[in-house]
Image (tube, rainbow, N blue to C red; front, side):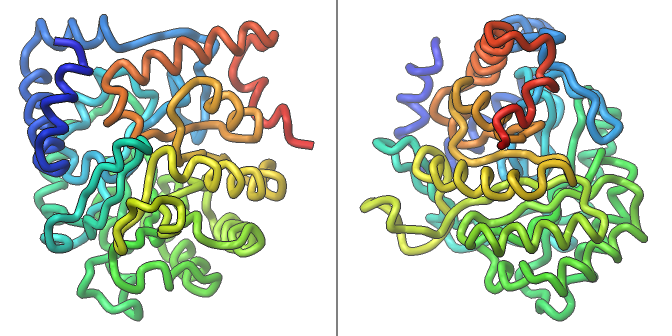
Length: 351
């Protein structure tokens, strides 16, 4: 069965149910040797032109999957079979929490987009720590995406991030700091210079792992640059631009809550990334996220300054061949433009 046929069945289900069912299938495949071999052969693409050493880590290719897909670190091993250059697990919190009321995930099929109001639903730090210990050591770089509990007041939010950084430092290659989800009340209020300064300084004392800041797309370029620059000055090694959007004017089909991802936010993501990259390209590693679905867009973002890229929604719509397709086409496009390694293309179009 090809993915289009499988997708037609999965899309008859509630989106969250379909995701859980697909996750079960991936976990079964992980424990079946001949399926492991089949998945690797079918969906992985390797080419040294895509290889980079960044943050003290080896990335076989620039394409990763963003936070939210593997909230409970159940899928580290199976996802690594699908050819990703790196992974994230989370967003997770110190205490387990249900998240927001269902339904909280919607497909915007005609627009190849999703809208989610999940609310950091996860099993909590203790359960997830057991998962990552079982999956360790990893075959690709893996980042822990950490957030605060819904019931933790913003005044106490720092403690949640500190607990997670201290307890998971041995079981990740870096921390993605999530203060930009729209689905935890008042979380985006933490996107301030004062909190970012305090947070990154505190986390550097808890872990030597690289710290990455993920920002929301719904701010002015000048605000984004100012906040990112503050994070860099306080120890951030990388920036992820960007999280989901609450600009509901992008779609007549949008709900009144949750964040938009996929094709709907592509142009918003590209514009914000370019604005930040023009100012901060030489100061930190940049990761672009938001509506990436093909190699042409991937190369554009790389030439605008992105060292790494993250996908999520396109993986739902295009299936497990997406990673291979993007990487294979990207390698050919780099070769056609005269680059012998992806590192030569990064920032090539920054004026």
